Image (tube, rainbow, N blue to C red; front, top):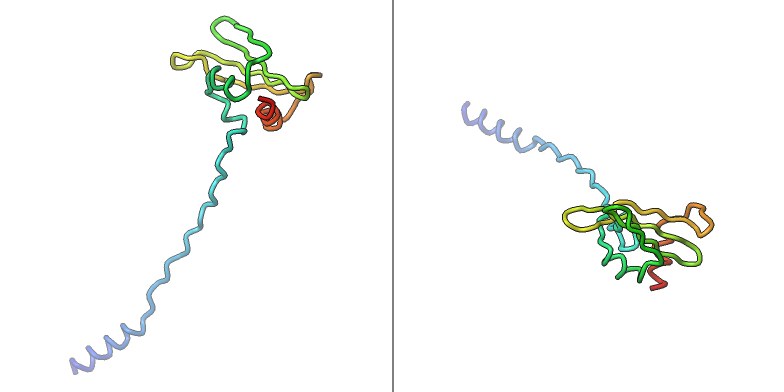
Length: 116
């Protein structure tokens, strides 16, 4: 009798299904920023900006901060640098057309990079 119970238990155990693992939803990879993305200008030093865009068309010291302006015939980029960690670093970037209308930052950055 014991053998019958043991055999039937083993037979039933072999028929049992294992729970299938649930598929894990994959998080889509975020695109890596390219060097032309404006957000990468934040935190940069004046030397880095000059290396990327060439010499600024305007430099305006404002107290302990500095405004650097870079221009093309189609856009103007103003970078505002403030003291951070012992160096002046970009804290804000503003882009516009020469007439003052708002301009797309990524397009302006691309134009400035191709000019230099």
